[in-house]
Length: 257
Image (cartoon, rainbow, N blue to C red):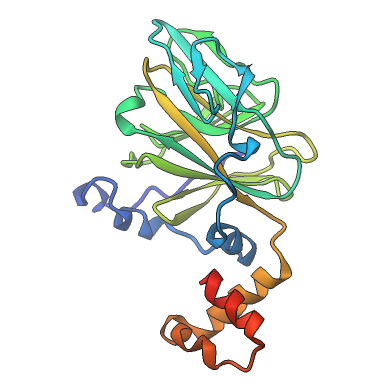
């Protein structure tokens, strides 16, 4: 089912477009597991989990040679989608989707789908979230879509970079914008089935970039490092070298900060 994302306070429209301050009131606390994943160095940009699928896409989507960019051809009265090449069945995973606001058109949707979600239809429609096999966030209207039903939100100016947070173990999907985790947008996603990042678009020339950032399980060292930094607090982080720890652990804490 869908979970209503916070709609924001009444002053959001008065703030500068895409200012991170517009999303701070919407942020919810992250688990230690997600905090470690978000603060870990991203995997290599060439990772195959960053690739759009050459097979699971509308023919109106053309892929770059590196398969990280999908560009929709100018086509009238068509809605078109593309999925990632590699899906996941378990774990916590974060992908980055870069989609410039001026390239979104009337139906710009990012989300997660199973392998049999439709990827093309006639007319201008939402595809990701239009059936029971997919879950989508329509960026222009800030609407959540699943099973063909939408949950309306107060419109927000969503910047070009959005992070998808899929917890395949818990069956939840959420989003991070400008460093703010907006909480669980969808719950009750199916377990033990392959789930893929997916987008759908109706705008000719829309260029959408995918990058797999990181996933868990996080290492015990990363969780311990996060706990130490949280207990030290921001003001005392520069004194980490005074902790009674072996040099190797000191270096690990310094490199992860």
